[in-house]
Amino acid sequence: MGIMTREEKEQAIDKLLVLMNEEIEDEGENINTCTFDLSKDENFIRNFGNIERLLETIKVSVSRKYIKYLYLGHGDFDGIQLTEEGQGRAISVINAKPKADDSHSNFSIGTVNNYGGNTQIGNNNTQNITNAVKLILDSIEKANASDEEKTEVKNLFSKFLEHPLTQTLISAGAGIGAALI
Image (cartoon, rainbow, N blue to C red; front, top):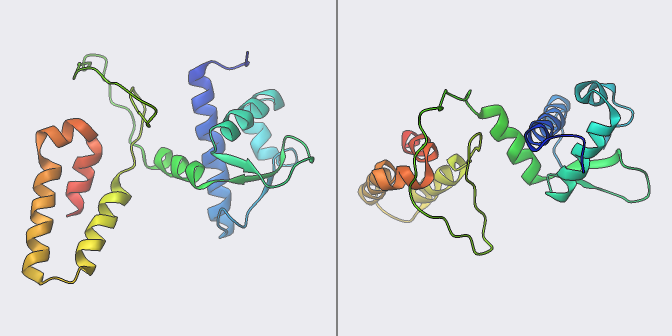
């Protein structure tokens, strides 16, 4: 068993991914050209308090495909690269708003059955749908259609995103997406 609680692990993963992403952006690199040797980077070790916490965070992050080893046989701390999934989580953490006091806002919307798909339920989750909404809007703009048709489709899409059922299904993310239209 690890030395961190589940909540501490999630916070540590967020911290690791954000630190990696910030370093990549500060250097003007991208995730495919930047590798890390975390054993030599005092910033990473200092942020995790001790090497055991950092190692546990690395192992969980690798198992979830947030980071990967570029080559094997060099140890647990070097040859590490941030993946697209890891960068997506880092950006979601950076863009997340501070958590409001929701101690009195629990509600039930029914039963969730997951048959092998991705499911995200709980507090402190961030769903990043803004990019998908932008992709749809860009596709509408690039479509071979008249301006009137494009405006009509965007208006219908906006109504879809603003509908209470849609809001319930994808939570606050749809409100963000509707604001883009």
